Length: 311
Image 1 (cartoon, rainbow, N blue to C red):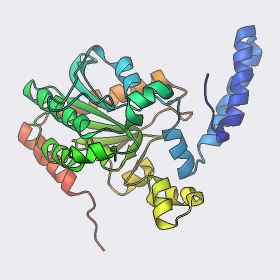
Image 2: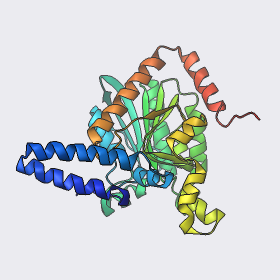
Image 3: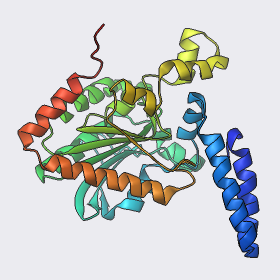
Image 4: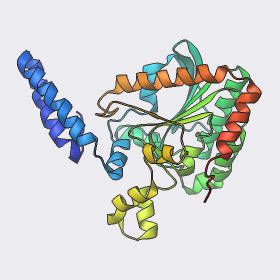
C-alpha cells in the first residue's frame, strides 16, 4: 500500500478516486480526475520547503539502489565481501549490462520492512562495505568497465565495532584511491546523501542528484541538536544546511540534477529508472571520448575546485 506524506494528502484523495474510476472504466471521470491530479501535483510539489524535500528523499516508497539495479541492469551478478572481514549488506556491488554497456554498479541499500532494514543496517555501511566497494572498483578498472555509484545513506555506521575496524580510514582510503581509478566513474544521489558515508562512494568524474534527493555534511536532526539543542528546529536546520540539489549546483558542489517526474520517483519508479539509465549512458559516452590522462586531469580539477571561492 502506498504511503503519503502530509503535503501529499490531496494527491492521495484524487488518486483513490482515480483508481475507482479506472475500475469502473468511466472514461469521462478518468480524464477529469487525471487533469485534477496534474494540477494538484503542480500546485503542491512546486513550492516545497527544504524540509519537505528531505521528507521525500527519505520517503519509504522511494526507489532504493536495488530497485534501480533490477530495473536497468541485465545479466546482473552480485559481488560479495571485502576479502578481509565479511560481506556488508548495506553496500551492493553488481556487475552486468546497462543498455549494452558492461557496468559495475555500487549502491547503498536501506532496506524495506523491519527484517530487511536490520539486515541492511538501515543503509549505514561498516568499513568492510567501503572496502568491498573499493575491491569492486579496482575489479572494474582491471577490465576497463565504467562504474555507476548510487548514494543513499543516512551516514556511515558509527558503532563501536565499525570504529575498531577503521571506519574513518576505510572512507579516507576510498576518497584517495577513487581519484586515480582509470575508468569513467559516475555518482548519483538517489535519496539521502549523508556525510562521509556518501562521500566514500561520491568521488567520481560526475556527481549528480535526483530532483528530490539531499546531500549534507550532517542530518538536519543532528544539526538542530548540536546548534540549538532543540529537535523542533529541524526545519530551520534543513534550510540553513543548503542540502537540496538547487542549492548545491548553485555553489558548484554537484554537476547535474536528474529531473525525476514532478510527482516524485516514489510514484514513477520506471520513468525515474529510465532517466538514471539515460544519464549514465550519456556521461559514459562523453568520458570515453577522453584519453585516460585527460579524464584523470579533469577529475582532479573537478575535485580540487570544490569549496573554492573568492571575495
